[in-house]
Every structure is written in structure tokens, then in C-alpha cells.
Image 1 (cartoon, helix red, strand yellow):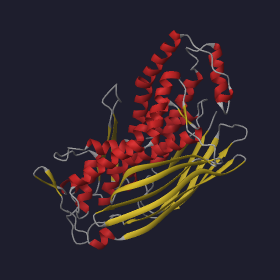
Image 2 (cartoon, one colour; image 1 turned 45 degrees about the vertical axis):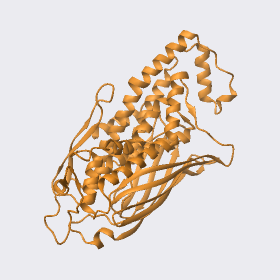
Image 3 (cartoon, rainbow, N blue to C red; image 1 turned 180 degrees about the vertical axis):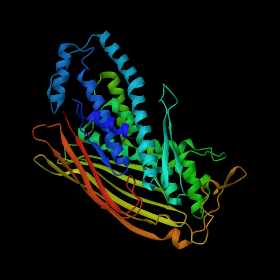
Image 4 (tube, rainbow, N blue to C red; image 1 turned 90 degrees about the horizontal axis):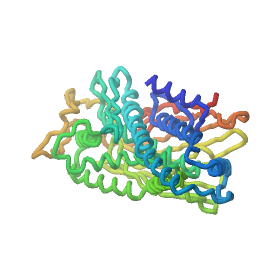
Length: 461
């Protein structure tokens, strides 16, 4: 973990500064991992851009530089044409670049986010006295290996049911957050570079693809499969009202809807095609109205008390940065839960200062962070699900009362985001997020009531 942090800060100290800061917080949350991953990706992009004049004539290279410096590239004259041979060679090299460098790199970043800043974060959160990561395994991405990853950890005591559930969903939770950060970054820059697109695509679709991969596999024990472990633990904790196979079918359909209706998946695909063909990014569609951009996005999500539906919206006004607001709702067993939230990092700007807000509110079941009072032997997570005819026999293995399982709690989180850009060094800035959340589940945040504190910097030396 220390080596990973050192690597991030070395990248930030290079001469090719990114827009995304290097951020640290308690236990290195998915938010810190997202900022840091995007920063590393952008550093590499900037490094390549500095030397991308290969296969370009002097006039073409000058045009590319002028286009980068201009706010609106349409004011420039049409770029000089390359010879047919250079165009073919350039496209061949860019296709190889995407297939053999950027796609594997972005896959490795998403896997690291899933394991280190996902599962690792929730394990770190339960405390070293209770559990500790022993090893991360990050496989070489395709085409150099089979990809994938794993997190191995020791448990020094039985974890509470909600802690087990949090750890199971933490990997896909972390990548969902990375996908959201990447989407907001695209909107801020008003373009999508084909080289960076596969990171957002893989991160945002991590959960739905994971769910779909379980289809037809409930007949066999898949220990270590995040969604299998999640469903097993969930059906062991709450009284069952729906057959697991039916629940999985519903999740698969919602996963397909998540992938198919996400407009940013198509932006990513279009940007890769355009980068291969011309080496240029795709501009985000912006309206010449007070609302410059609006895109609704549906997403399936998992919580420690059941699946939920998230109806999100990305919005950009003429002034300020992009906003994200959402409404979420779900039900499982006898529980119903809902919430809503808003985020914008640039609501108010004055000089070198930017101020933003992040707000979340929810009504949800209480987390089960205690053992049943009437049973000392009920916590056996590896034995909680029995099999009957090679299928789930959905019976509740815990002995919690209805009041413990179905009592509701209201909660909220509020934080102020502040960014300062040094007047003398326009590409250097400081970042901070300070706030507080009450107890309860909020993706990427501690499940306890605690202070929210993130500090970061984007520095050039």
C-alpha cells in the first residue's frame, strides 16, 4: 500500500500535471482511489501527448498544438492532409496502441480499484484487530494474461453479517464510484479521449457484468464470486420472500438495462472509434441553452440489505461545473429503503477559489453490526446456506428478531468541497473535502457516523 501511494505521488511530481489531484483519506476509500487512478491515467496521457508528433508533418503538428490551445477548435482552418501511407500507418499504430497498451492498462487500474480500494477498504475499515489483508492478487490483463484479481485476508474474529455483506460488494462499489468520477471528468473537459474511455466503461459496468456472469451458475458453489457470496449471505440473514433464482433473473435484466441505456457507454465506444480513425477525441454534446448538458442514467446497485435501483442524472449549466443528482429505492424481504443526493464540485467560483457541495439523505434498515442475543453459534457464514437438489435452499440461518432486521433509520451526509489554484502556477492546486455523515450505508464512505475528510494536491515541481 505504501509503494502504491509513493507511485501516485511520483506521478504527480512530474512535469505533466493532470487535472485530477492525488487524494488521501481515512483507510484509502474508493473516492481516494478514484481520484488517484484518474490522475495516474491523465499523467500518462499527457506524457504521450507531449510526444505525439510522430507520423505528423510539421504543419499537422502545429495545427494539433493550436487546437489544444484554442477553446473552440472550429475556429481553426481544416488541418493539412497526411499522405495515404501515413494515414494507414497511423491508424494501424493507434489500433495497436488501444488494444495492447491502453485497454490492458485501464483494465489493470479498474482491477486495482476493485481489490485495493474496494474489498481492501472495507477490510481496513473493520479494523486490524478484526481482519487484515494478507495479499492482493492482480492478474496480468488480457491479452497478456487472464486478468482478474483477488483479495486474501485473515479474520481474527467472526465478522458481523453486515460487515460480510459490505466486503462482498465493496469491489463493484468502488468501481462504480470510479466510473462516476470519470464521467464527471469527461463533462468538465467537454471531451472523451478514446485512450481513457475503456477505464470508465470497465469500471461502470463492473457490477452488471459480474451479475450477468453468475447466470446459470447457481447450481454450483462459487465460493469467492462476489455476487454469489453476497446472495448467499443476504439470504442467510433476511427471511426469504423470493426464490434466489428469480432474484438473480431480476438482477440480470436490470444489469442488461444498466449497460444498454447508459449513454456514456456509447460516448466511450465512439471515442475509441474516432481515436483509431483520426487520433482525435469526441466532444460531448452541449446545448446552446441555460442547461448545456443533461443525461439520465439508470443503474442497478447492491447494498448490505438488498439490491436497489438508482435513477441518476448528469447536468451541466452554462456556469459552474457538472452536477450529479440521484434518487434511489429498493426492497428486499420485508425491508423498503430509499434515498437521494446531489454533488457539484464547482458551484461557486471566485478568483483562484472553487466551492462545491455533496449531499446525501437516506431511509434504510439498520446495519446488523451485532450478534443475535439469543444465540451464540448462529454466526457461521460459510455454512449459512444449505443446498437442496443443487440449488439454494433459502432458509434464514440467523436468529435475529424482526425488530432488529426491519427497523428503519434516517441518515444523511454533508460535505463541502474546496479547491484552490495557485495564481503563479496555474496547473497546481489544492483539494479538500470536509464534512460529516451519520451511521448507515453510503457507497464509498464509512458505515459509522464519522467525519468526512479528504485532502489532495496537484503539484508541479
